Figure 1 (cartoon, rainbow, N blue to C red):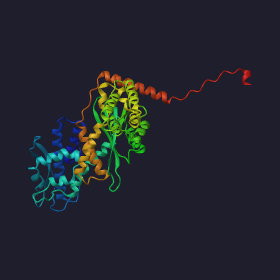
Figure 2: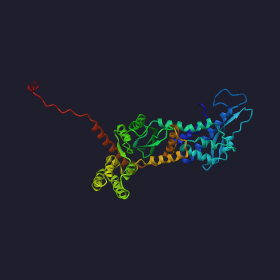
Figure 3: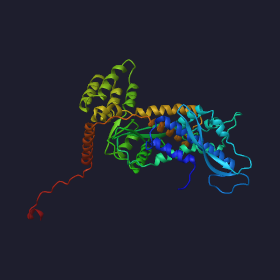
Figure 4: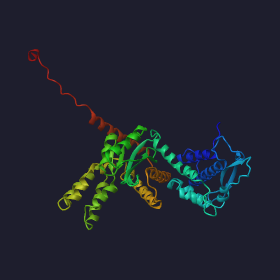
Length: 429
């Protein structure tokens, strides 16, 4: 078996915990493994700088020494003891002493904070340099070593963006976008994110990718990329009212219903009404969108139209715009409706990500922004709570799938040619 650096073995364990395939331990184990990974990568970078060559590279200078395995180091923390593997260097003119090991012995609080932020902030170079600084403020890591550590997150994002999606049995698919400054000096561009609510009730982050804007072409390519990677047909796709997203959904997911995000819709309605009228209109619109059935929702809409149509035509027009998509969730199990009628989950995460970009003012550029967004989203996804789907609700979902498939087949059935009347031989001549 080929020997690999200790940090690579730790990375494999950390990945297993994040993906849920390793041993349990929750946040505590995640913190310990992340801290261990940072220490081991830093120590290996320090050893590489001391030897002047990479792992297994040849061409040692006389007296530079050679790698001689690892020894176990340990530091205490609030999460328990953190063990790590420290590389040893033998046959060196001047005995090798790790300055980093001396520093980390008394810096566990900063290490843990950095480990937690590893997936939320993309391991800022400034943070790492500040952590591994000596008493005079000089960084003990070379700029190359720091860059290598921070770039690990980009490799993780690339793996995430290219993974197979066939294993995810998506029932409800949610998509939203946020404008970010991906190219310095250029207007903000859209970054699209998608997550799914699966057949087992769990939530999963599925995709994150840049687009020129929320237009049809960008959204279409975003969805097609997921389809190429095996994403199955969802029952429902939830989005805001951006025309580009709507057209792309209808093109790429013809076997799915479409739900208009009601949080966005209510904000649109509020902008059409005077402040003194809004509370009453809001209550009636909410009752309409949250009715017991689509038929009742339509009756309530008609009542709103009759009451406000003459005095508030723009508000009524906004209410009726894309109305069937606003009430699509009413076809689904009652216990699911609250979770599937908005894209609020991503909205909250985008807000958190925006607060972090203010803290990191130079987080511009596609690579830097995507690292930061991926870190924030994937970290939050670890804490997402799913919903319980009972056997009865599964039967309801299967019945909805059958109805959708029948409608799709009927819409796409070739037009039948009307039968020709029978002609006698005389008529034929």
